[in-house]
Image (cartoon, rainbow, N blue to C red):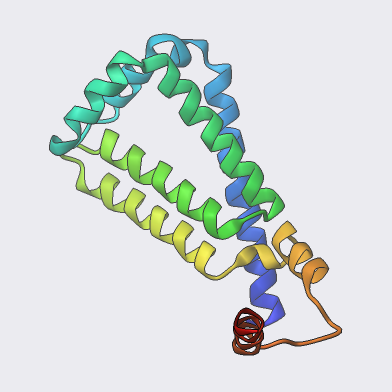
Length: 167
């Protein structure tokens, strides 16, 4: 990947992270949402899709815990996106958050569902493109852990281990 594209994707990654942090903090600051407003919010945005009602019943019993969990997960995903830490895993978790939100709020609203599905796909694509390598902790870790003195092939390492076992 050329450096210009890598830098553009790093900026996109950072902006997505800022969005996740902003969303999580705004949810934590909203006391009505945290203590009884989660189900009202889900119902106001369309409610869950038909086969998601069982999960909706679980959320109903533990509404406050789910509200804190979703806000905290959003903040964690945002911080990881901003810092470029473990982007492959972070994009997987963030796309799961977005898909969960899509299933919980898109009953009968196909444009909303498809938009959130596309957003989850973009997050997965960012993880696949390893956008944490540019201006991120992932790139810093790879540079720090790279062994420049010797290049060892995995097959050679396995063969050496097998010889030691046989001896």
